[in-house]
Image (cartoon, rainbow, N blue to C red; front, side, top):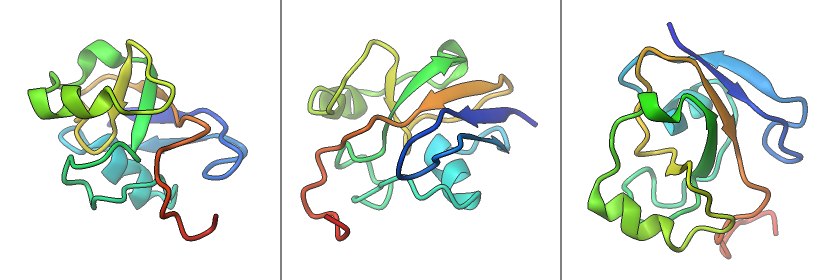
Length: 112
């Protein structure tokens, strides 16, 4: 089973983490299943960018982006060439290293 290594994030995963994910699962689903509460304001329907992640290793193993994800990513904070919406990035058989950006565009976040 592939492993997703999450780099430290001050809010969601201060110490970093490694979680196992079944192939065919989205990165977002895998993180949530392991109590890493990554934002997902649109409930994983590819309608926002709050679940934006940067895939530091294993990017090529993910499914290809569709046009709606590409269009939405243009609005993400801290966009990089290896950025994905974690709700749309489907884990294959390769391990991944993922960074959750420091900020998102979610202005309705309850804690802030």
